[in-house]
Length: 312
Length: 246
Ligand SMILES: Cc1cc2nc3c(=O)[nH]c(=O)nc-3n(C[C@H](O)[C@H](O)[C@H](O)COP(=O)(O)OP(=O)(O)OC[C@H]3O[C@@H](n4cnc5c(N)ncnc54)[C@H](O)[C@@H]3O)c2cc1C
Ligand SMILES: Nc1ncnc2c1ncn2[C@@H]1O[C@H](COP(=O)(O)O)[C@@H](O)[C@H]1O
Image (cartoon, rainbow over the protein chains, first blue to last red):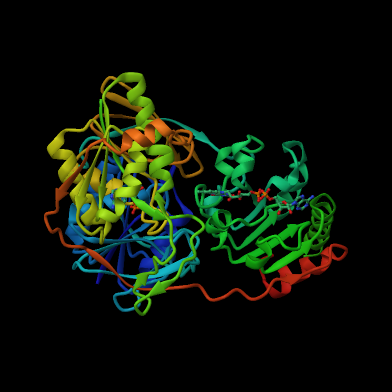
């Protein structure tokens, strides 16, 4: 069984979510070829996660139409039964195009490797799961970021240049504005997130949230009203209408836990809630909780974590 | 400019999620359906703003049965000129995309606008499929959209930041938060919506390429472990030794 993975890269570095997609394909148990564009160093680290061959298209850009031509061409050439993407911002542009071009069933946002023909995915914004089957011979699968842990195998892949034609680009990137100027991990990839809501009373109080995030190496997030009133930037808004995240640790401070907020964070592995109101709905979704005032508890927690970090 | 906005229905965000028929169907009992928020708040409203500034028309398209008509009327009340409903069961993203692409190609639209994703199936795929079937560019997760003559300038969510991109029309986009502000329909809009054209197009029986075999609810969460506010060190200990996340 031949499986093709599309791997995205940023300035030559294969993204973490793409490495997860490579690992996912390897776990499916086939011979894994990965395809990427531009130029990367060596096999981009993909052999280490199970790719046996890496194909690099030096003549393609991040344009979805060029990448679609590339992926479809390579998939046909190697006779791939499955084409795997990450369900990240690039995968969301390219995977549907590839599925439509190949007339193949697409399972978007898979959270587990196929069991028989069934693939598990989140539905209803994380409030339920569906088991989905493709009715076509070929399948396109996009893997939800952070749902499939990375397991290094120590292998390496052979590298080949793509010699076909990817055609012209339909979407031209003019500029890129990075969101995190402080060097923190972007929210969709973050393993630790410290998030705060209206309970913080005002934007001037976010210092204690940033300190807590700082000691953990976490990325900061916020509830929707906080972004809407301009206390925090829009890109920090998590939830049903914001970004959906699934970090290993989510600490929610002064957030009530409305169902629309939970919809974007309930995939987190461990949830800690700090809230003055013992009846706050968030406690029902939490693993650990402290009923207390954020202005007292958060600085104490930061200190305790600092002590822990220096001891470990 | 001729704009087509893809509108789908979704359970209200506070709906209780439950399944029937041996966990093979969503239990619609007591569920209130709304216009999928991304379609309504962002795609539709930005389409209306573009029309108000530059002229043209805004048509909505929905693939589904007559049970979609209330949400289609809501879109008309917000300001769409007319609506099309392809009378077919929306069984699968690719089938939905084929119906939309067929209609859009036959009727010559400059811009096809989708929402970022449906909040029930969470696919985020229909727009990209429509674009490929129409063989035109697609910009997903757009948070800003301006059109100048035949060129669109957009901002889109990308990994680690925002991309500013350009593409020429015809174009398909998916709209994310930030593109526009929600509009509440007024009485005049609601009255006008009753008589605006809602054209029902017969379906051509396109096969589904995927099917949901069954649904499952997540296991009930164990009760929260509460730690005293005076003993945050215990929380650190639990996170390290029990949860093993730090
Ligand atoms: C269609 C729709 C989509 C939505 N999408 C989203 C979404 O994507 N994301 C989202 O977040 N929301 C979303 N919402 C809004 C959501 O319903 C809630 O209104 C919102 O999440 C509440 O934000 P909050 O918890 O910050 O504020 P509040 O509900 O005001 O809660 C503040 C909390 O802070 C606590 N508190 C107060 N003082 C302190 C203190 N000193 N220390 C500790 N705790 C304190 C209070 O007890 C309270 O629980 C959506 C709503 C709708 C209708
Ligand atoms: N049945 C449908 N009819 C019309 N548009 C739809 C339908 N389903 C999805 N869409 C559009 O496609 C977008 C993405 O849907 P999805 O790929 O299912 O997450 C939605 O936000 C809608 O704009």
